[in-house]
Image 1 (cartoon, rainbow, N blue to C red):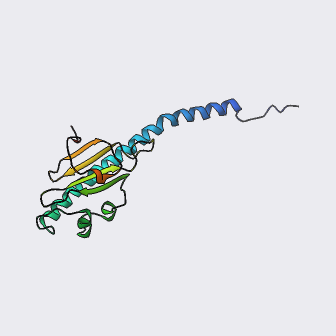
Image 2 (cartoon, rainbow, N blue to C red; image 1 turned 60 degrees about the vertical axis):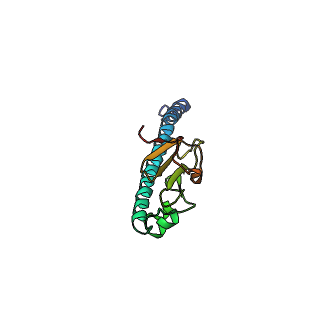
Length: 158
């Protein structure tokens, strides 16, 4: 005996729906990851601009004509504890200030991961006392190695 009022989906229909969802996910996930990397890079750029402004403020006030280290900026409450942390990362980027002297500083940032599928960014950034934000294809995940905004970097927007 068969029941003629059987209702439901067949196995083939369910497999077709699962395949369609898989195709949509395969298209959407890479775009989502690219958007996240772009947002992380935008946040890193803005954080470097914040560091540059903090250096200018420190130079004119507490520094008495000298630029300050990250610890100096943090002690003067010119940067927040997340950005000023020596071991922390903000939006998938680590930050460091090097080359501090009376006449110069270099603030650099590098992604916490730059080569895997889950890379937090694809570019390193730096800014110095000139105030020009520079970038290059990520060569490091350690921002302390960025000691100069030299010829390996190009101004952002060019």
